[in-house]
Length: 458
Ligand SMILES: [Mn+2]
Image 1 (tube, protein in one colour):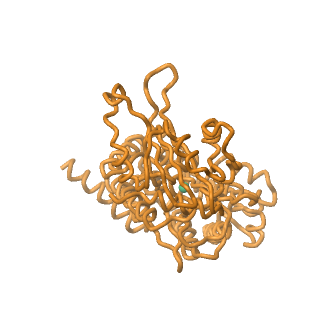
Image 2 (image 1 turned 45 degrees about the vertical axis):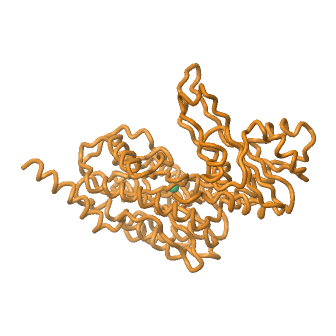
Image 3 (image 1 turned 30 degrees about the vertical axis):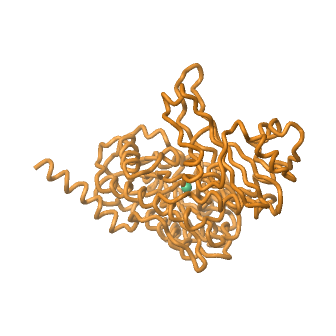
């Protein structure tokens, strides 16, 4: 595998910082142990540190001398005793080559190496501030840690070619696993078993771990947006919502597909699925540089209103439905979020950007103009959440637009979400997610699941 472009990320961060001198110095994460035990938590690197170093090991630090553009890695000390358990650490020379740094030293030498650079200032992140202050013992100029944090976040928003290639791979691996579930799951399967299959398939193809707790929600459970209990079983006649994505090479994927447990969608599920698919198509067609992310949310709501009016769940004038945020009671989340090293990636609300306080919109995780190299999820959904519908009923301006008798007929659908990951390009966007979402394609895969069952029985 090619070298992670950490040095370019250090330079991009320095550019965002607007400083032409000084040193960036940051510490990575350490291992954590369960209380009163010697069992370690699975190690997850600090995301900002990973971006700046490419190192996915505990106990490291990294520095960048802005003026000379020198990247310096500080390697943890592995004693002979520790090496028995975790293996030998590569030499400093090997670490330099592996991570693309100009120099490497043991962490014990940080203070001497940094002081030797006579830095005008030492920029660090809030998580590292205390340790950096202690190492400088009063002799270093330490600007507010929020400055570097804002610079790293902004640099992370724009993905370079190497990052896009990794994200494409994460999406391919996760998409293939979603497709495998569609072609194999059967009524009676435990939700947890589908999660296990997803994890097994993605790890087998080189993924590191789940990017987030997978959601496998059959029937009414899909009305719980973050249903990670996965404690039920798939029932014939239901749809199942699978929101699962693997992290590969440090980058998350976040994909949702919703499909029938039986071989075909029932009438109500098919109708709602069709509306959600139209919502996603409308948004994807508009994703391009210069467009505002909150306008994508409005576009999805307008398309949803059209579909729900056609089906009779809504009634009245489209402008009044929009003004009263009626669709927010069926899609109580935002249209999508930035994605990268973190599933909900940094930079959605640049400093000073307020949230919009309206149903659905208040959970929008990004408000900014789309620009090339930004990566987003596009995840429209429609849900029948009893508590939210009760709120709608109790709000006359909203209730006037809803036919609750018709809504009751759709309640069993639970919820439908379709989620893809995209990267904005100069002319539009690239969709990184490759698994099927058209109704015919999904039903063809579901038919395979039951065809193989027939074979097994015979
Ligand atoms: Mn998402």
